[in-house]
Structure formats: C-alpha cells, structure tokens
Image 1 (cartoon, rainbow, N blue to C red):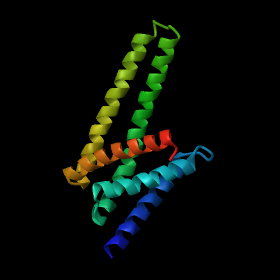
Image 2: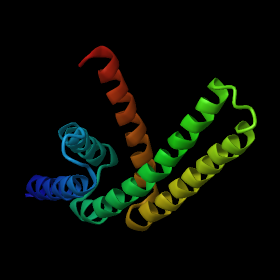
Image 3: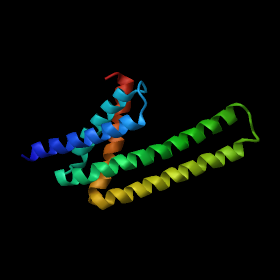
Image 4: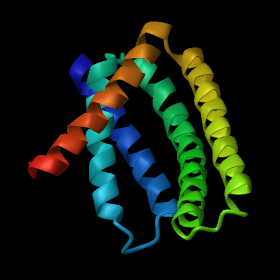
Length: 152
C-alpha cells in the first residue's frame, strides 16, 4: 500500500508540473523534452530525498513554485552575462562598467532567491531532506551532463 500511495503522489506531482509547463511553454518549444527531463528529475529527487507520501504532497507544490522563481532569476543572470559578453567581445568599453554591475546584481538577486527558496523548503521538510534535495539536484544535473556528453 505504501508504494501505491507513493506512486499516486508522484503521478500527481508530475501531472501538476506538466500542466504548469504547458501554460508557460509555447508549442514546438521543446515541451516534450522538458516534460521528459522533469519527469526523470521528479523521480530521481523523490528517491534521493527519501520523501514520505505526506512530505511529497507538501513538498512538490512548493518545489514547482520555487522552480519558476529560480528559473527567472537564472534567466536574468544569463541575459546580463550575454550583454556583458557582447560588450567585451565588441570592444564597447564604455558599456562594460554598467553591464558588469548589472551582471553582478543579477547574481545577487539569484542568490537571494535561492536563500528564500531554501527557507520555503525548510518549512515543509526536515533540514536533512533539504540538504538531500540540493545534493540530489546537483547529482541529477551531473547525470544529465554525462548523458549529453556520452550520448546515453
């Protein structure tokens, strides 16, 4: 029965994520690929963290919300980076100081977002499981990079 309940909760979490991705991702923009990766990530993290069914029910909605927040913060960092890179590569030296400040500010915002997300996770999970979340996310990221490089 315990496995069945976990399966139901994981299925619900994947469904909620798929609905949120569908709303935020236009057709033909890699939606199937993103959904597949997120399904793998949800399964990987659920196992890595060792979520109970009750914890999973409280955790996944918070994670999905923070995923959007973290994604927006990272997008701002990458946008500022590209602008800075273009200025450096194009020898636009007068633009560089302002663009460097913009990039560093975006990193600060991303870091504050990460701290706020960690606080939200601590409200629904024990601190040990929050630590396992971050370790699991990094392991999953490395696993995906390995698959990309080795074609597996």
